[in-house]
Image 1 (cartoon, rainbow, N blue to C red):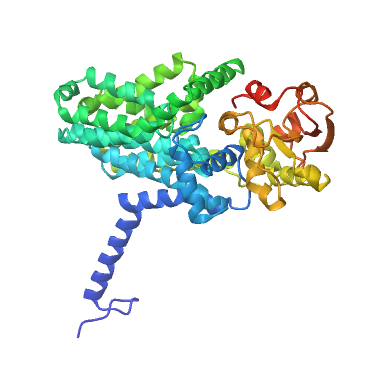
Image 2 (image 1 turned 90 degrees about the vertical axis):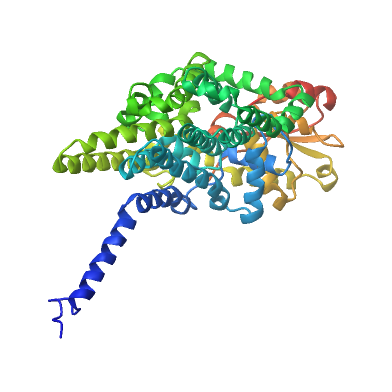
Amino acid sequence: MQKRARGLGILPNQRSAFVNQTRKLQSILFGGTGLLLFLVVLRLLPLWITNGQSGWHRDELDMLDNARHLDWGFVSYPPLAPLLARLAWTLFGPSIPGVRLFSSLALAGTIILAARMAGGLGGGKSAQAIAAAAVLIAPIGMLAGVLYSYSSFDCLWWALIAYLMIRLLTTGNPRWWLAIGAVIGLGMMTKYTISYLVVGVVIGVLLTPARRQLRSPWLWAGVVLALLIVLPNLVWQVRHDFISWDFMQSIHARDVRNGRADGYLPEQLVFSANPVTIPLWAAGLVFFFLSPMGKRFRVLGWMYLVPFVLFFFSQGRSYYIAPAYPMLFAGGGVLFEEWLARLSAARGRLVRGVTGVAFTIGGLTFASIALPLAPVNSAWWNWASEINEELKEEIGWPELVETVAGIYDRLPPEQQAQTGILTGNYGEAGALNLYGPAYGLPTAISGVNSYWLRGFGDPAPQTTIVLGYRASDVNLIFYSCEQAGTNTNRYGVLNEESREHPDIWLCGAPRLPWAEMWTHLRGFG
C-alpha cells in the first residue's frame, strides 16, 4: 500500500499529478496568454463599472443621429463609425454600455495586437505583456474606449497595419500587401488622419530595404484595393464639393486660434502615452532606429516618426499621433525583455515588481480622471472634471429635451403643426432626435455639419423653438423672439449647454426666406 501524502489525504502519485495541474493553471493565469486575457478583461470592465454613472456624450449623440441617416459620408467623418453605431443600436437598442461595447472591443483588439507585435519582433512573454499593459493604461485608450468614438477604431487600424507590416517584413511574402491595403481602406473610411500613417509607410518603404517590394504586383494590388474601399466616400465628397475639407480647415483654424495645438510636444508625455511608459516608447524608438534587432523592422520607426513630424508642422492636436504608440511599446518591450535577461534573478524580479507597481499607479491615476467612476458633484468628480471636461458633456441631455418639450406642449395644436426646433450644435440636435420622439417633438434641424445637408424640412417652420444661440444672434435671424425657457440640469453642473447658451427662445418668422437664410446658417463644429 502506498502511504498517503501527509496532510493532503492523497497518494504520492496523485499529489504529483495535482502539482503538475496546479503549475499548468499558474502558467495559464500568469503566463503570456493568461495575462493578456486579464488585460483585455480590464479593458472591458469599465463598461459595467461606469454603467449608470454617466449619460451620452455630445459626440455620441451626433454619431447616433448620423447612424439613423446612413450614407457614404458625413461632414465631420467618414461612414464606417456611424455604420457600426447603427449595428450596435440594432443589437442592443438604447443601451449606453451596449453601444460603447464596440469601442471597447476595438481597444481590446489593440491590446492584443500590441502583444502580437512584440512577439513578431522577437519578444517573449515579458515583452508581450508590457506592450499590452502599456496600451491598457494609455490615456487616449481609456478615453476612446469608454465612449463610442471613431478614435477607438482608428487606434485599431493603426495597430493592425503595423502588425501586418511586421508579418510582411518577417515572412517576405508580398501577399501581405493585400491585407495592408484593405486595412488602410477601412482606416480611411473611419478617420482621415490615417493618411499621415500612409505617408509614413511610403517613406519607410523608400528609405529601407523594403523598397524592393515596389517591384511586387501585390503591393500595387493592395493600393488598388485600398482605393476601391475608399471610392464610395470619394464619390460622396465629389458630389458634396469636398465639404469635409471645408470642415477640417474650419476646425483646424478654430483649434489653432484657441491654442489647442500649442501643447503638442509636452502632451505626448501625458496624454498620448502615460508618463510611466516614457522609457518604454523611447526604447521603442531606439529599437527601430539603433538596435541591430530592429534594423529589419525600421519601416515601423518611420511609420511613427513621419506622422509625428507631419502632425507637428501642420499644428495637429496631440492625440492625433496616439494610435502610433502601440508599435513603439512593442519594440520597447523587446529591448526591455532583453535587458531583463542580462540581470540577475533577484534584480530581474525587482525590476518587474517596480514596473508593475508603476504601471498600476499610472493606470489608476488616469482611470480616476478619464472614467466616470465618481458620483457627480463629489470632491473626486469635481477634481476629475476640471482636468477632463468631457465628463461634464455627458450630463443634462434628457433635461434639455424635457424643457423643450414643455415649451412645445404650451403651444396650441395648430401652431405645433407649424413649429420647428433649431439648434446651434450637434449635441442638442442629437439629444432632441434621440429623446424627442417620446414627447412627440418634431425632428430637430441645425446648420451644423451634416444636419445642414439635411435641410430645414418641408414645409418650412412658421414658428421656431431656438436653442444654442445667444439673444443677439436670434434677434438677427428671426422676428419677435422671446425667452421661453432655460436649460439646466438636475446636478447644477455648468457645462457648455448650461453655461454658454442656456436660454431657449420661441421665435416667429425668419427675417429672410428659409432657403436664403439656410445658406448663411451653415457652420462646423
